[in-house]
Structures are given as structure tokens and as C-alpha cells.
View 1: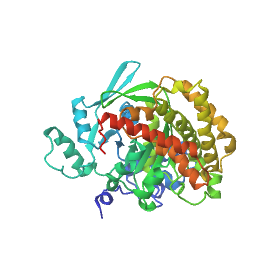
View 2: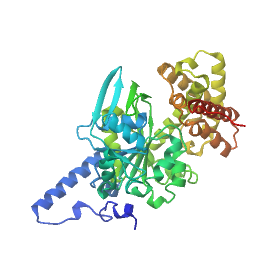
View 3: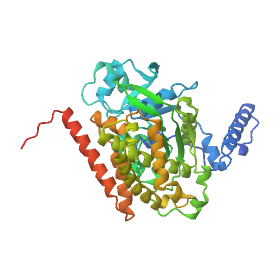
View 4: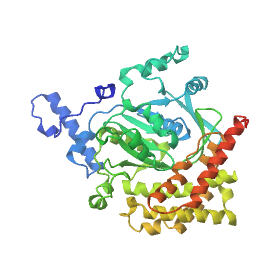
Length: 446
């Protein structure tokens, strides 16, 4: 038995219910009454949950939330959770010693700048995941001693609630570093751009469905950008976050979605809740700064695909033309290119087996409607620099493989050619490589 298994929280026996308890002990009867009150509260919020689901949701869960990824979204989520009246313990999982050094140098707080006004929140734990929970490779710097002792403490070993905000291309490697700390009672919330990430995670990190954590998937529309300080981000405008528990047995890698799913128990989010998944979702929704809300999984999938279409235009074109989002408007040549991209995007999305149960999906994902969404977002974020352009300017790898690249991949699987999106992927990669070589002062040799 590995460490993760040893530390898995024990759940009550199947079929356990407080009404089965018979006792004259007053204290025990009080506890039973309190448990019944919790069950009624859960039922009132999710009336379609089964009795077994309700019992599971009422179990005690860890009060710690781990956040993997210290980018703009990760910092903002940590900042928002720290604003809760009954705030959880928040642990930032960092992959580089340099990031830990910056954490100390910058005062051990997260700062969000809104309209020039700074608001900092502190009280976070940090872990260096490459070394935790083992001793460091070599003698650690003295100021890291507390971090390493915290990371090695078995009380903090098992991760029950994890929010992943890393760049899509780093998700698999980041999760592999903490794979043994996650189990079937864990819940992972993915808040990332692009699609196809969970398929890779299932294939390379958690191939066994029986031991796989539960997943919450989400979309983020908050306007955030980087700041010269590592643990500070700039907030440009209020957006929102949509979240949904992903059904354990439904995904693109499964066979064709069956009639039971089309009739949609998923539609009511009756997907086999665990204690950690319910606790994490409720905590995220209660963090007012996030403006988060829960959706049916089918509705969340529609929003993911709409965001994918918008990002497939604004992100790469802003990189290619090195411009703010609004500069893509009122330009006939750019509009023509936008329509070529969206024609392919529309064909691919409408062919996906995942959306065939959706009503009126041909109209919802028509190229004309997708173009209207792109224009709407470009106007709303006219002065913003897209996250992909920020990545290129800072010499970071982009997520183009999970946006336009995802369209090309799904199109190939369905027999649909996507030459425009294929070219877009290569152009973004070429631009990114040029910028990295420029920053590295690259000298070519023959």
C-alpha cells in the first residue's frame, strides 16, 4: 500500500444512514439530529441527489485547498479564497526554487491591483512539489526550512481538493509530480484555457477509472494580466467563472454518449457527488471575488466550446499582428481571416458526438453566431492584451495546441480538413520561437 492509499480518508460503510442508529445516549442523539439537518440542507440544494450521495456529501472533509499553478488565474483564485470569512487553509504548490525565493522576497502575500489600487492578502502556505514530501536534493537554503518541513509532514501529504490553473501544456507533468498524493476521494478543479487537457490527464496520469479523482471543470472570463512582481496580478474587468462536476463515466474517450445521458441525469448535476467535490464547488461559489456559479455539465460544455471558438480567433491573431484585442476589429482583411477560421471551427464543433444531444446545436455553433461572439468579446476587451500574446512577449510556451490545435485534431478524427487553423498553429509557434530566441540572445551556428 502506498502513502496515498494509507492516508485516504475513510468513509462510512455503504448504506449507512443516521436513521439506522438506535441509542439512548443523549449526546449521540444530538449528533444524529445535527446530521439529519445537514442532509436536509444538502437535499434542499440538490433535490435530485440519491441518499448515498447525500450521506457522502455530509462527511467531514479537509479544510485545505491546494492550488497548482501560480499564474494570473491561480493567484486570483488564491486571493479570492483568502477573502472568505471562514477561509480554508490555502496551499500554493510551486515547481521552481526561484518561485519560492520570490515568495519570500515579495513579502509572502498575493496582491491584486484594480484600477491602480493595490489589495494584498496573506496567510498562505507554500510547497515545493519537486522535493515534497521527501528531503531536498542537497542542502536547502535556510529560509526554505519551514517549507520543506511542512511539505514532508504526513498530515499534509494527501491532497483532497486541488485547483489546477497551470498552462495546458504543463498540466500532465505538473500532476505527475503529485500523482501519489491524489486518490479517488480527491477532487481536481481545472480552470484553464483550451480543451483536450482532461483527455491527456486521463491517458497519462490517471488511466484507471477506479482510482481516478473526481473532476470539476470550469471556464474563466475575468480580465487578468501579469505584473512585474511574481505574486501580483492586474485585474482589468469583472468576469465570471462557470463550474460543473464532470460525470465520472462520460468523456470524449468513452464510447458514444448513450440515451441515458441524453435524458440527462447530468442535466441535474446528479453525477455521484463526493464529499470533496461538493465542498470544493461550494467553497469556490462562496468566494465573491470569483463571481462563480454552478451549471449542468451539458451547459458548461456549450460554454467551453463557445470560449474555444472565441479564443481560436482573438488569441492567435493578436499574436500574429502583435496587437490589442480591439485592433482586430474594423479591418476587412482581418475579418476575412476571422471568417475562414470560424468556418472550420463551426464545422468541427457541429460534428462532435459530445454535442449531438444538445438542442439546436447547428444554430448555436454556426459560423455567423460564433463571429458575433468574437466581435462582442473583442469590443468588451478592446484594450486588453490576450493571454497568448502575453505568453509570447514573456517567452513562455503558448496554449495554441489546445485551442486551434484542438480544432485541427478533432477535425482530423472526424474527417474534416482544417488548413487555415493548421497554418495559424504554425504561425503562432514560429512567432513564439522567434521571441524566445531574441530573449535568449540566440546565435545560429552552421
